[in-house]
Amino acid sequence: MLKQSFIALGVCGILSACNPSSQVQTPTTHVETAKQTVPFKTYSAETFYNTTSVMGSRFNPNGDKILISDDENGIFTLYELDIKSGAKTQLIDAKETTYPIRYFPNDERILLTHDKGGNELYHVYVRELDGQVKDLTPGENVRASYAGFSKDSSAFYILTNERDNRFMDLYKVDAKTYERTSIYNNDNGLSVYDISPDGRFLALGKNNSNKDSDLFILDLAKEKPEPVEIGQFTGDAQVNAQTFSPDSKTLYFTTDATGEFSEVWEYDIENNVSKAYLKDQWDIDFVYFSESGQYRVVGVNEDASTRVTIADLKTNKTIALPALPAGSLNGVNFSNDEQQMSFYLNSDTSPSNLYVWQVGTQNIAKLTNSLSKEIHQEHLVSSTIERFKSFDGLEIPGVMYKPKQASATNKVPAVIWVHGGPGGQSRTGYSATQQHLVNHGYAIFAVNNRGSSGYGKTFFHLDDKKHGEDDLQDIIWGKKHLQTLDWVDPERIAIMGGSYGGYMTAAALTFTPDEFKAGINIFGVTNWERTLTSIPPWWESFKKALYDEMGDPATDNERHRRISPLFHAKNITKPLMVIQGANDPRVLQVESDELVEAVKQNNVPVEYVLFDDEGHGFTKKVNRITASDAYLNFLNKHL
Image (cartoon, rainbow, N blue to C red; front, top):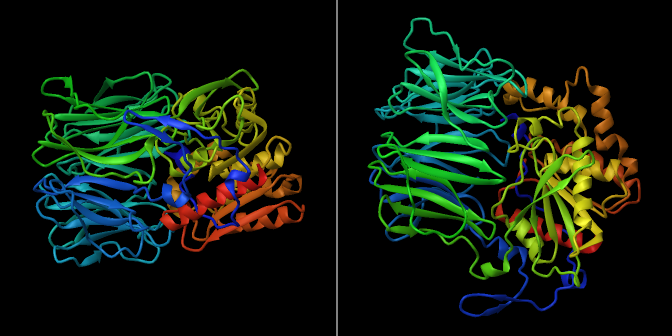
């Protein structure tokens, strides 16, 4: 989605050490557990990042292994996990951060993907049975992605921009020879959402604006196939394909055409009829089916948490899982025989762990233990959802983390955390970076300012062409809310965020210089004139929607200059930290270089951390550790 374009991920930095205990008073605290009283303690960033991040939940054809990638050795590396023994086998040498795609349906060849140093030019690779790895999408400036297997397993699909670096074309790849056949040349800037299991139909999308998109179906069986629009609604509406039914007769899509939130509709291809299918009081983010169609998985964005339900369509009943710890499910997949289900469980105090369930039984196995063995989970903090009134009376939600040390007699410093986007959302779930700061006595309030996703389309569009203005005021009023809490020190509040959140941090220090004591800008936009004219070419199909959101450089140059911190950096008077990846294709290094040099002219403390081996979001564990240390040291020094 467009508003997710600038996504804030983990980052890294290296700064001088500072004794946290000299800055944050940490009284002796005890945490009650079922077995004993565990004295409260603080942990290093290294300990927090001893946590293993895991992704991937696809079964092999026999259903006895799962393909995963984890960063236990410092960089995301491809493994297969034996379900019975829990044994993990490394599949390739980890030279780049590598992500799993899937096993082939009938053998244990593997599809995988990675870029180079965070440049976002992902290629699709195959790992052969003998361990050899082949690049299926070679080329220096090629960006590619996997798009699914055919139902008969004889071929799979990939998207690449090798013909025109602005658009992704669709190819069919023979599963034995890897010979490619062109299926769809994307000359009109459409997005290929899905291919029907029988290979006959394509679901295509077009972004008309940041409020309106169209959905088309293309029948490849016709002699001269032309996209046919479906789900035609009156007025502006976002219409996005989700999945075809296993029998290829129905296309399911989400739309906000009839209300504030996205609901699921179904399109009968043969009869050219659309009708409502699923509705909730929040956005339905996704829906998909097991291969046979027996099971349906639905995810709802419920007040910054994901609620997943799995229905057995033979009985029309929701599946009841065995007792599990509190948390949100994600990554649900089924084995080929659909007798097993894999999924992840994540919560504020527990990173994602992989489970496998024997469907319909009480037999469930936890295959990973991601939290560092040195950390007592009782020492971590669960969030609460809090709301406050902004400058104009609008109710603004946020995710609050209150440190164990905080009380009316021990007021703690606080950080306003701003998500990426524009239009992202701070959500519940484990964050080593956030828990590290909270563990050391810093409250975190992750404000979901107007323009954030998840709270209805009206709320989502309230910041259109008002960035650095109305949305920034929401952040300021979030700070005011913190100052009403009897356990927060009202004079020690900082701001930090990544990507768009980094922009908001720089904007806060520039345009409201007396509000925050310090700011941490993590690969944030500082010059909208440059950013909006230097976006990667593969964003071409989203450019119109991005301009509707932020303004067109051809006509809104004056506003872009007015809201860009770089051109007003002389106003920055509070300490600033800037983090940047040298390979970032979205926010170019020069943006951070120039801001740092400008702030130095103010004789204001500014610290700059540049990483040569990262892009827009840092993936290497050593960098994330150094980053967390950098944040803590900076806040200890200036808060």
